[in-house]
Length: 316
Image 1 (cartoon, rainbow, N blue to C red):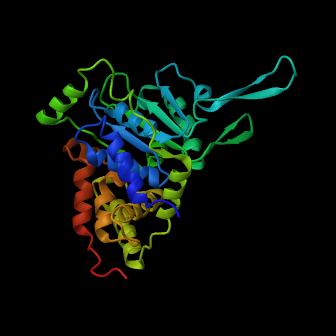
Image 2: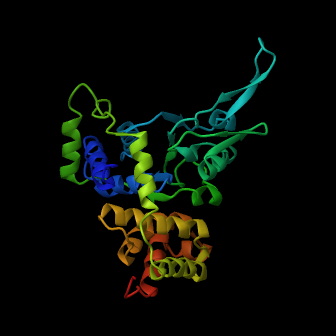
Image 3: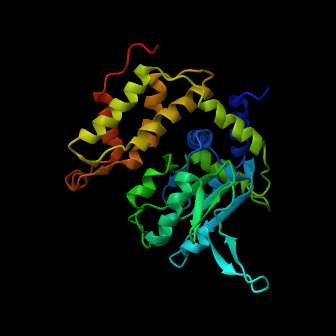
């Protein structure tokens, strides 16, 4: 019998806590994305631990790991791979790119060109790469952990809408409290970084087992109607130029299922949906120019939508 997914997740959380201080919500969101076979965008200002969070999760999994440090000169072939002629055999051979791993850290993804960013579209949606007409499957499980600085920082390129929609959820870490920062300083007074001492606590088979259990969580017609109604309201909101796509609707329901798993339930509640709505949906919304001029944010508008949608009184 496979291990309870809750105990596996909490084992991962405790391992990552050895490096990341006071950011349990961010850690939990990253693990929910892992359970749902989703990809994570970690967005915040420099120096708050975006790369450290991604690397800590990767090192906690006994999976193959790769990292791309995105810069303006990174080419699409660096990501997907390329074919070249073998001078001994005379045949064309595929040379794998950085994506041919189970966990990929795409560091500072918005510092490379839109053309290179777009090389990840097929990878993130279909778990495969196509090079010179030949398709290559990626190893499973597969997850992209991307970090980016806010788009108003020098040297950044905004991610295309299609790329943003392929991220299962977005995480914002934020600055630590004084007490948390003192704890961080205490952990970095030694010769070795805590990240280097981190080891895996969960293997490939365990990750695949956890992912399979999320799909077994029951979602009632009322819960599914609630998710669909939230999405419909974002498409009708006057301050939103682009609402939630059907891909985003599916992601919200999957995230709610993962929440239920972590709570020890085999059914989805409206609270699960509400809890995951902001991290799963906000990065998919595009505000109208008028809304941006007024200083509105996607989070404010998403909260407005949640308040305007009636919560199902009964979930059967």
